[in-house]
Length: 99
Image 1: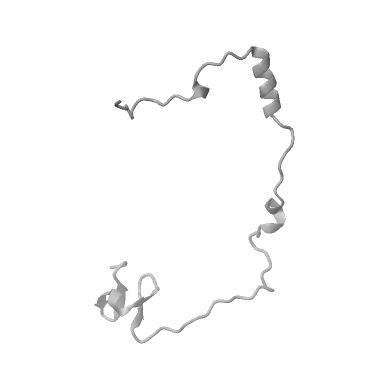
Image 2: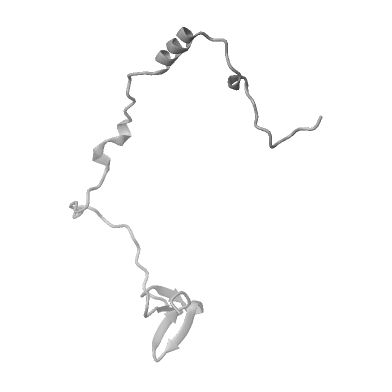
């Protein structure tokens, strides 16, 4: 039997039911709930406000100095590897992205 995959699919729920109006109203009222779910993780205490005092925070970033095979782009000021050097205009080193 050939199947037409472009035709809309029909489920049992798509067929009109024989339920009475009273039964449908009762089901609708049962489905609605007045209880609000509150997630404990959604409290305002977990958000950082701009301008907050971060003097007690400690950074854990290891800074590595520029290596011999790297250069600083004179346009975007990012440290790049020598293979990304596009031009050397009078002592100005420019990366491939900025060229």
